[in-house]
Length: 336
Image (tube, rainbow, N blue to C red; front, side):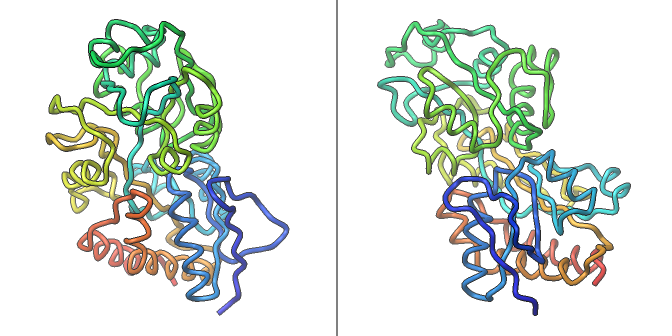
């Protein structure tokens, strides 16, 4: 077995390319970077084999796997079956997590501010421009919010986090659906762009009266102030592992070609409304089959031994029944 150098950046700084070569290379979504880093570190300690994962956004990850410049791509915006067939790719969900609105408002603590999909959409449409807007005040009768202008922060790169966030806005705000829609990249009506979950987290922490959206692990590790949300059932929910699991429990992976499942705006009184899965993309018939098989060993290890690590970062492990389906997909579709 080849010795594979581990190149995983410390903390939440995106891994970058290095002068060292790695047999297993991956690139894409910033959403799962914290857990992929943790799994890679444990895998290196247990096996001596490592992983070079570049946290560059889902859009760039899809392009890299299509161009065959990496062993695997990672995306939070799953590809549809027709696209997978066209590119000769196999896709599966690796882990689930959640996206949270984050703010930087003086005196407001994590979970105190309550927002709805309708209000979030209107903020990102530029229709709500101040924190003391009546629509926000109505949701927050006990909070004294400033009359200051809202600084809107959004992703500048092609992003699966954006795909899921805008999918949620389209489901909960009719104006957003008709004027902007959903996608990994959209024509943002307002806002300041930042690259990656890392960039949005950094921008929010440095900008007073800002609002943005990040994967929950970034909010937690960067000690950002997250908002509560009113879900589809009309209940105010906090971003907790129980709320993420409640939303994820609705997923039926068995009937979706290429495991194409979107978890936003799920029913249920306890469901967090912006829950999402993150996906792996690999070629069915890879040029470097040895690297491809090494990658599968890493993913198998993550499924078998990584659940506790995922939960520690507030991700939701894939259910055992789904893991068994995925392992059958590997055997059937990936050539060794």
